[in-house]
Amino acid sequence: MRHRRAVVTGGAGFLGSHLCEALLARGISVVCVDNLLTGAAGNIAHLTARRDFQFLKRDLTEPVDVLGPVGYVFHLASAASPADYLRLPLQTLEVGSRGTRNALELAERKQARFVLASTSEVYGDPLEHPQPESYWGNVNPVGPRSVYDEAKRFGEALTSAFRHARGLDTAIVRIFNTYGPRMRPDDGRAIPTFLRQALTGEPLTVTGDGSQTRSICYVDDTVRGIVALALSDHPGPMNIGSPYETSMLALARLIIELTGSRSRIRFIERPPDDPAVRRPDTTLAYKTLGWEPRVPVREGLLRTIEWFTRELPASRSA
Image (cartoon, rainbow, N blue to C red; front, side):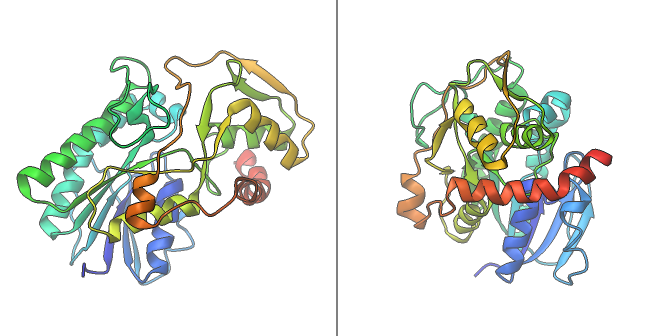
């Protein structure tokens, strides 16, 4: 049995804050490490009074230490949306390289299980569909998205090196498009952008002709998969994502329907290297962990709309 205490880097981010909650609900105390560059103190404000939760404002590109025993280190620290990593290219590369090494060395000192939050972006614009873990990807190493794609690919290589050369207990989870409460309205990803536009009556901006697809997974399901992998002994890499694949145009129309918005759809230029398709093969997660998504897309979107409806006025005034 691992010690029931975890470090979560990037724990004040959208996904990280939900992971902190899930671990606490399992009786695992949490040390949240975040520099708040893209995370937000408000995401964890409801946890800070708990005795089993600690927040450390630290930049992971510098060595970080934590007092006391640790059983798990979850490394989520990184800009995750295109808007953020295009704005912060050097910081994204640094946290994916130097930051990953510092997190790995923390896990090594504590003899903890290390879980790297990688991404479906390691598959690039895939030539194999759906994408199994055995697919090596089709990534442009010098394109505008490469700072994120290659940072995560390097993080996977470094994690694997620590496992094979130094015997560290590691796991790699490849996370596909996740959505839910606490996404920033200005996040830049499709769902928060569409929701903000629909709720404020702006046109929904669909890139290209909208035929490109993504597979969207509600945050509770994604976090449940991450925790299940951490509590197993599987090294990964393992896809965690929904097989529900939808085009961006269909997603925009669904959000207009669910919000009751009068917004129209406006087509804009598609970004360079934007993947044409994206859907995980989750056979490994199902066979190994018994994991599959449970929250239907409509239900997940309605929960997210409820949160955005409540939070958007405050966000806009801020």
